[in-house]
Length: 304
Image (cartoon, rainbow, N blue to C red; front, side, top):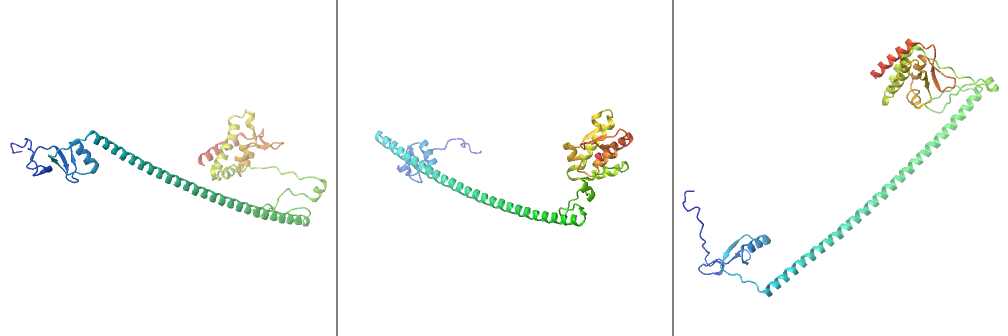
């Protein structure tokens, strides 16, 4: 910053004997100190540097002789031959790579096919083993049933046609309607006892239904019971609400299987019709009992 001539250009001082000239001279070309090649201009220098990675250059007074037409033609042919060789080499490499890729693809396909076949064989073995186990289980069950039936026959013979056993979790012990010998002789079948329920036990019935927690079954049952009782309380003049179809899917799956559900309906005044396919509200059903039961069902449903 303090030198007055800092901004002036630096004069060119040729190297002693540089580029083969003695005593200096005008620079007419550039020389690569790493390979000794003479380059005619800066463009060729940059091309050479990019192509070879060389970086050590100097100016030279040696003039580059321009190529004759024949030399240019030979140079072009040489470059074309070089490009053709490079292209052929690249195509061969791509062809070899394609072949290797196809081999790898076929190998993977074969391995996947083998794996799939092995999995299918194992699945067939598992299925065969499962069928074998099922057949064996069915055979044992048949043998057990035969033994139970033979046992029942002996028990009937010993007890004048009656069975003392009931249905148990350990085996087949039928608990059909028991007949007296006199009834059997006359062809008379003992009638089923009427289903009874106590209105005083409505709280107990609701508690039983609420105890079913798996899958929310108890809450679903409470909802349907509330609909049955609520419809009768809210719309007593509607005749359709005074009858419950016991053969439909909702009753069979969400009411009938749960202890206390049917008992609650009977306790509030419903009774089985003669056809046995519906519960009908009795004419003398207690309205207060119906209203109280509706309130209790609403509370149980909310507290579930």
